[in-house]
Image (cartoon, rainbow, N blue to C red; front, top):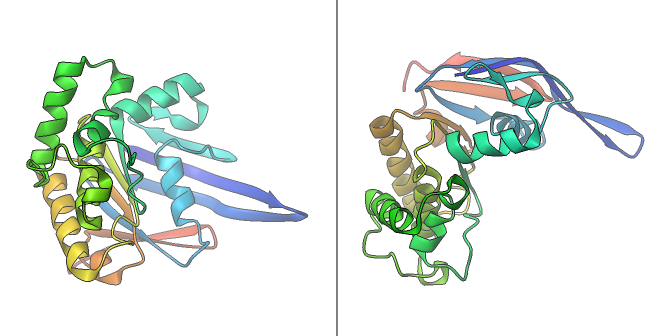
Length: 227
């Protein structure tokens, strides 16, 4: 699935050079579930952006299914993101003027899927996350946990190979956190996804089969025997 080879990412801030990633090597197999942890500014979100093709490394290779994302033309990279990678973010990123169903449908528009099929697939995806009765609700008419369920449905409606989540429970209380994690874990198992998540929450991390810790741009990975 993923093979990262000597990946570096450098930013210039004034006269200072920031090494967000510093020679990262990482292998992630099909169907893997990996949690990424580390201090603020350590490179967690930068690594997730590389895996999602949202940013390019300064050097090194980010290989997904034999294709180096770092070398793809922008149009092809956009296509890979649209077809193969689902994203869930801390802030939900829903369009406030669209209903839950319409928000989910937005993920299918770039794929050229016809409106009738888009509506059907969006309704099915929302039903799978327990929101079958909320299709016509706006984000403002739903709780934070329900909005994140919509975001999960939007990420999964295109049937991606990979699900990337950046602090998906960061804006939720403990009970909502557990609900959302139950949904994500169920989707991972049922759909056979490769699931990679950034989180600061140790209670979530300890349930993951593999934990990657990134500090000052360097990474270490361990198997979690207690998961």
